[in-house]
Image (cartoon, rainbow, N blue to C red; front, side, top):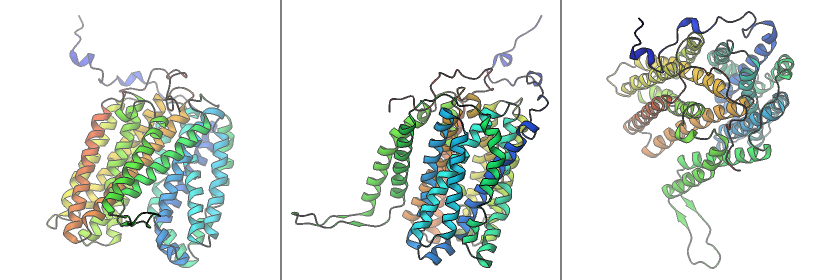
Length: 506
C-alpha cells in the first residue's frame, strides 16, 4: 500500500532527477550547428560591455576636450533612452519578419555610432553618437535573447544565458583600465574607433545562424510599437529628470500679465515626475505583457520581478563606491574591489543557474537569489557606520552579486520558457525594458535622495541609509512577486495565439 503524503501533493515539490532527460548530443551552445552563432553573440555582448564601461571611464576627458561639461549627463541618458527604443523596435520586428533584419540594422548603426563618437568635434555630435549606440545596443541585446529563445534547444538555453553573463566579466575586469591607458597614450577617440571592426566581424559569424531562425507572431503594429517606445522614452526621461531637478525655474513675463513666474525647485520636480508618469504608464502597459504592473501569474510576474530586481540591486550598486570613498574614506581602487567581486560572483551565480535549472524549481532558484541579494544589501548597510570594519563592504557586495547572477539568469530563462511560441521577440523586449527601466529608476531615486538631503558627511550617510533601506524593501516585494512564477518549465510552449505584449488597443 502506497501512502501519499501532503508533501507529495505540493505544487512546488522538486521533480525527481530522472524527469529531465539528459541533453542530447549536439544540444550544447558550442556544438557545430550553433558554434559560430554563439561565438558571434558573445563577441558582440563583450564589445557592448567594454564600450559601456569604457565610456564611464573616459567621459571626464571627453567633456574637457569638447568643452561639454554642461551636457555630461546626457551622454549617458541619451544612450539609455535610445536603448529602450531599439529594444522595442528589434523585438517586434523579429517576431514579424525574423531576427536577421533588425540585427543587421543594429550592427550597421552601432558601427556608424562608434565612428561618429571617435570623430566627434562637439559634445552635441558625441551625444548623437551615443543615441545611435544606444539604439543599436537595444537591437543587438533584444535579438540575442530572441536567438536564444527561438534558435537554441531547451538544454542549451541555461548555459547560453550563463555565457552571456560571462561575456561581461573580462570587460568588467580590464575595460576601465585599458580605456584609461588608451586615453592617456593615444587619446579618448580611439576607445570608440578601436571597437569599429568588432561588430562587422561578429555579424559575419552570427548571420548564417540568424537566417535559420524563422519569423513569429505579431501582436502590435510596428509603427505603433515604435511610437509607444518613443513615448516611453520621453516619459522615463522626464521622470528621471524630475527626480534630479535642483534649480528654480524662472519664466519670462507673459505678454499682458503684470507678473513673472518663478517656480520653486520642488514644485518643478513634482510636475516633471507626474508628467513623466502620465506619459510613460500608458506606453508601458501597451508594451509589457498584460498584467505585468500587478505581477499576474506566469510571464507578467517574471517581467515584473525582473524590474524590481534591477531597481533594488542597481539602486544600491551605483552608490557602493560613493559609500566607500566619500563616507568611509577609502580609495577608488578599494571601492572597485566591491564592484569587481560582484561581477565575478554574478557570473558564478549564472553558472549555478545553468547547473541546477534541469532539476531545480525555477521559483525557488529566483527567490533564493533575491534573498541573497537582500542579505548582501542588508550587510552593506552597517558599513556606513564608522565603527564597522570597512572590509564588510566588498564582502557583502560580492555576496549580493552571487544572488543577482542566480536570480537574473533564471528570470531570463523563465521569460523565454513562458513566452508564447512565435512571440519571443516581444518577450525579450519586455525583459530588456524591465532591465533598463528598473536600473534607471533605482539609480534615479538614489540620486534624488543624495541631491536633496545633501553631500556633507553626516547628510550623505543619512541619504544612503534611506536609499539602501528603500531598496531592501523593493527586493522583498520582488520575493513576494516571485511567488507567482511557474515552478517548472511548461510541458509544452504556450499557444502562438495567446496574447503577450501590446494586446491592449493602441
